[in-house]
Image 1: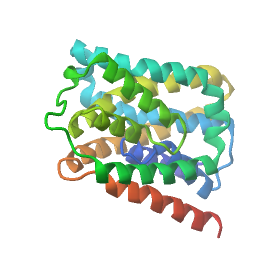
Image 2: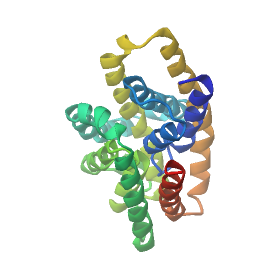
Image 3: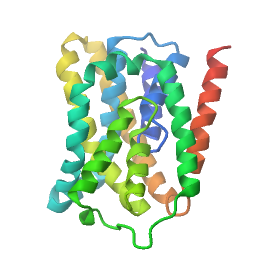
Image 4: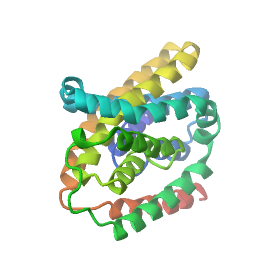
Length: 257
């Protein structure tokens, strides 16, 4: 992987991490289109740079998470089921699912279809939960279960948590912000686990590539977070469902040429 490929993937990650379109799926498909050789390092890179994007949330929301114990406890409750499932299925996720374009393509397509159908039939409750502090621990844990579906690349962590939260009665802005906060421990744990298992095998050049991708994803994600918060004030997520399906067809056209 060269510098320009790293920058492109960092931009892709930063733009897509918090949108309901699957950043991991985009990274895998973009890597294939750029003919980057599949390797242990590439799988780790695709995990690690997501933490770069998540650091943008730490920069913007860190004080809320650290200083508000009610919010912190609910994020912890949502993180527990994700962590447990992630540890159990780590090898399958990294060595099987993250190396399969077919899994990504089907997940993007089916996830896009579900997102469109959900939004077309979704009606916000008369009194939605408008504050993270009002979440019950059971609701928070269930959102964590929804998030764990995104361990299948192409599902989208953001889409899974947002749809789960809307289904459970959260206001759109509230679940989007909760999804932001939940990404912090989720991606920190995923990256930490992978680095413990894999980092010793990486060269200094590869570590430099990781750091570059991390930084690019961080700065681009700052823009993406602010865009999504602005977008949800006036729009639902149907456009992202359509986009996901369009990406599938575009990839298939480009890949088969």
